[in-house]
Length: 280
Image (tube, rainbow, N blue to C red; front, side):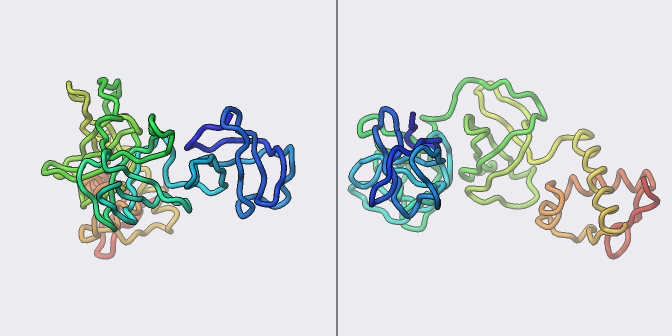
């Protein structure tokens, strides 16, 4: 059975001049246009296909992968805006994605980035985007434990920090005071749960707290030193962005780990960076 707005494994029923037709179950036969059909495909073969509706509301299949599927939250760029209808978003397919006016939380303009949830409209059966995120997020208090790793999508900035969708299901907040550098709308990050508040919202961090953060990071630094021949060009003046790119942590966490290694006499701090002492 084909699911609209998702990737499916579908059987080729027959070939035709415009492409091949796939068995879509209740959706009937679904055309995959010729330009998307893998070479050598024949009736009876099973292909991976993303199913959506074309401009005439007919189910159509493609081997292209959109930037987000039904049920996903994503940050997409506005290609055009029509106040009477809504906005059209780039989601990586030939047919743009409609963000209806009724589903906008604020007016948008061409070139804007907007955080949305992809859904199937109950009335029309079409795939649409909705910027009314609260409608789609789970308000039940989640059972995350402290320090649990989670996947985050940054959806906006507030005076306190950055709002993020946690594991495609809950609201979370990354505080400005705990970040080494600014984040960007649409960033997809690995983070950690600090606390779950009574209202169900989650306080987040990009680093583990305390010793639980430092212990694995010291091993990571020593491994990197060994692979680099015993020296690395990281020091107090290294930018937070370079440190996060190399080790995935804030500059503060990195400096704490260096301090732990220095006290254990496992590294030297030099003008050019850090140097390994001995070998594990």
